[in-house]
Amino acid sequence: MHPVLPFCAALLLGAGAVGVPDAAELKRLQTQYAPVDLTVDLARFPESERKALARMVQAGRLMDGIFLRQSWAASPSLLLQLAGDETALGRARLRFFLVNRGPWDRLEHNRPFLPGVPAKPGAANFYPAGVTREELSAWQASLPAEERARAAGFYTVIRRGPEGKLLAVPYSQEYQGALAEAAALLREAAAFTTQPTLKAFLAERADAFLSNDYYASDVAWMELDASIEPTIGPYEVYEDDWFNAKAAFESFVTVRDEAASAQLARFGAELQSLENALPLEERFKNPKLGALAPIRVVNSLFSSGDGNHGVQTAAYNLPNDERVIQEKGSKRVMLKNVQEAKYQKTLLPIARVVLVPADQQRVGFDAFFAEILMHELMHGLGPHSLHVAGRSSTVREQLQDSYSPLEEAKADISGLWALQQLVDRGVVERSMQRTMYATFLASAFRTVRFGLADAHGKGIALQINWLLDAGALRVGTDGRFSVVTDRVQEAVRSLTAEILAIQAAGDAARARALLARMGVVRPEVQRIVDRLKGVPVDIAPRFPTAERLAAEFP
Ligand code: ZN
Image (cartoon, helix red, strand yellow):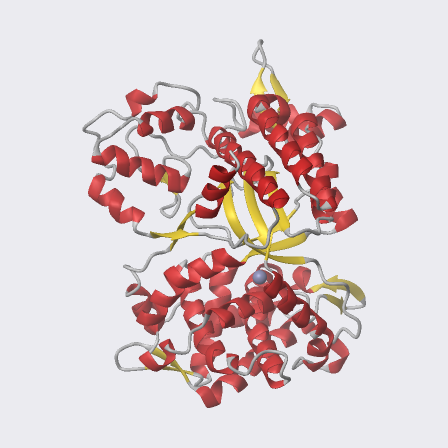
């Protein structure tokens, strides 16, 4: 076990270390992330709102520093050290450190890429050096209920007091300096904006930074209805690999995409009639769909901290606080310009490798984004609650470990089925008929490339294999794939029907058998995935709009 606490960063970076990447190798690793400018058109925004945005970006920058401290105690000093290294190797290390927000390669199972750096600590810097999980659990169990809730909660770190006793320290104290500064900036932003719900969120979040009580600001975030949609504060818990309990700081400063929001509303209005038309026995259909969980489509002009490392976040569901979810539900935010950047820098190059030339011409961003929206919406359709052997249950409960891959596959393939319905009804432009299937196929290979470890990967493998077996995809002698236009609609319908039938029956054995047979990477798929090695895996965003705002309103 490596000590997690401060030691001299200079010792870490001693020359002549073996087994860590040199400048050339770091350069290669860096090319996995295609640099891209994330810009947002602010021409229609009045000065009050642009000033508010500038302050939100400044507050967002402070989240970077906090996140760095949270992920590893030695990271801030390591960053300083790297920033002062003018050699080619030093430059390459600094760039890759910034992409990963730390000294571990997030695409390579967190392999350290700097000399002397230990394995990524699962406890991050949320728990004291040298503590064990058992000691933490035993200590928490010994606390009175209220203290225990605080110790196990999102917004405290655990430290050792003077006598070595464990204690919970609120974020408002641990990160006091940065949070006080961020709160002041959010208050300035609140004073600038003329939009009431935005003003309310910014003021509430500023209070939360100081009081450590995030509830009211999470509620205000759910009630946001403004042209600017900021997400800033402690949110996701993945950096705490031990307990998934402690929230890491991040920011997304975004503005609403009006055209996409209108498109989403058009799709939303069709959901009940899509449910009614599903290829599923009538008795399993939901005659009255519940209210739609809110979805916001936005464009990002700045992100930081936990929201900006390794593979870029393209959508998120928040908040995570169950109390807020109970009362107000949660909201899905989709970052359209991030999706578009990924489309340009990874999906198009993948299409050029994977698809025959004719199908390469049929790949389009409008179809790509419409399919992502439909995926989200279709999660709400189809069977969810069941009656099994006289008692009520859910598809999730019945299908167990097969639930997630099958549900993800359902959202994809029924989304494609639904898009065809909308084309037929004239809700979606006719031109999408030409692009939707080839785009879907290229996007499927992008997912397979990330492997089958997660539910999306397995679900996509199932879909590719089903379409192959149905003769809806063809593999040419050169290994490239093409869509068989007159077969694909029926194959999409039949897989949609198969998955919905399994879900309606809650048939775990049939689900497991289907995934065992089809949720695999076949040789013809692997061969083409192997050719994708030179294609960037993701993007490394730059934020020129945020920089312009900073220059305009320092
Ligand atoms: Zn999904």
